[in-house]
Image 1: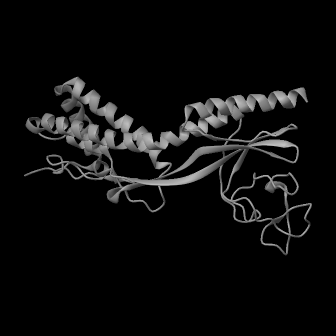
Image 2 (image 1 turned 135 degrees about the vertical axis):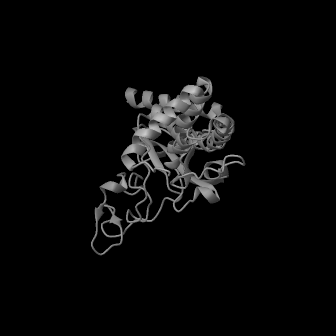
Length: 272
């Protein structure tokens, strides 16, 4: 007669069996698999922050990113403004290895978290396989995890392209590019756009009860509707004279020019 262990006995038995199995396996195989699982999880967590709504990894991984590529310098009402024009980009990646096991691995039923295989749980389950097949299974699992890392690396690299520009701008302008949408700010998508009528940012406009948006203090009753496409003000510097230029941050030369232009404007403001 076969005796089925109780839940309490299982909790004690399985860790002991796994520990015993690990002791029989090559340490480099076990350690490399665990390292891949941890690294892949870290990359996946970063990518999930940019995952598109209603995206199911089983049918493609759609990611959104905010591109900060185009920067302009202009003069307005005795100020020089540095503006960036964010763009929304979306791309879908094939990450099938995160949602489907390769042949030779799929006889174990995986569990899923947010549409992706829980590889740590799969690894722990595989340690309970018979001694004759556990090592070949782990070799295949390692190969599969390496494939997962390649897929995630493509997603992460694409997202990093926009982070690089964002970090560059935040560094040289000592600011944070916190972009959000609000359709009730003078029909603008961002409250830190500067109004050309009063020189104040839209967030300082008052709300008019009879208006659908915020109202410029100087105009009194008419909500403003200009400024399209949406832009963010990186810095406003008080200076006389004309300083206008455009910069493409994908070009290293333009990055250098932007830094020099900013330094010049700040020096002019200081000299007064």
